[in-house]
Length: 484
Image (cartoon, rainbow, N blue to C red; front, side, top):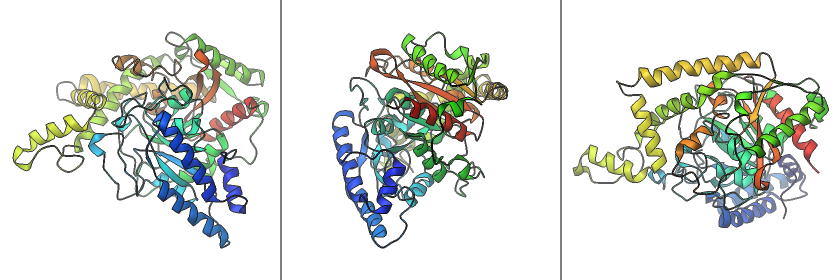
């Protein structure tokens, strides 16, 4: 059967009994297997578990109970977010057979609302990458053009939504890992304010940067999922005491002219110049023009401090990664290579060499160096200070406008293998997305139409802390206004 128009309508139909959760989930599983054959978007597809969960929803409906606001809605979850009953590998050989004894709070809350997890999605190992090519399970291929990357690190989740397998998927965003693949695959991708969603059950990469995010085609679906996941969690001290209802969906999406008439958009010129392809710039400018014509005030908003963002981000992120991945030493966590008699150092070296991929090793080594005694002040200490400067600059800019706008990524999806030997080029492409993570701000990537080769571009909007609802209002109005 075809996918329902959106998650909310699907759940409404399941609740009324006009369609069974089993039929919805069975169709999603069939699409997942078909996508897997050409895109490699999944690491695990849970046919038995998903159908059992769907059966439970149908039984509850049949008994006159309430199955939840996402009753029977198929959900895909990035494989670095723990799901009980499935492997949680983070795309790494070091965790290839790991099964978590607990479930991430975000997943638990969506399942409690009736959502059905159909599988876990492929990713760059531990979230370290921008193309989903750095996975022990092979690269993810973009469903729009299987010769190209899906973006990363949440490429599998973006691909699953873009291909119509599921209406909602979870990813994680450390420096753009939800928004950039959303742009490459032509879907919506939201990174919430740091602390909005519990990080409990997320396999950590950069703890002060990571946040669970959401992919969807419909902004109000994304809002519904966010509201369900949001809120304080006693298992995560960084989760915030904010009312989930403030990010909930609107009954009816606002018209573009209604949203735009009171909207002030600041275009960051430093993110629209060198390095941005002609096609991407044109698509983003055309979308901004739609906002302007609808009544929004669109103006240049210089934030020169963004020039320091990428260097700052990669020092902070790799430093935190080296700390978080230190546990995978073959002794307590992860796969083990060697015997007890070989000695701890030998076992650790061999376990990490065989368990961690090239990109993960690169980032761990870089992070270990910037935290070393001789380099700490020159690199990590300085990066921490510049991070504050960048955050303050964004706050000043957002005191003058409602949202900051820029291309999500400077190019469309590149060809598979094109940048594997040039990691610096990939790192520099995070210039716009890493800003929101450094400052802990919410940001969304909205489809901006076709750029080069018919491939999509994304418009990134960054908002003030806790103002996800404003971002989703703009995204909702833009996507509904563009729909045929």
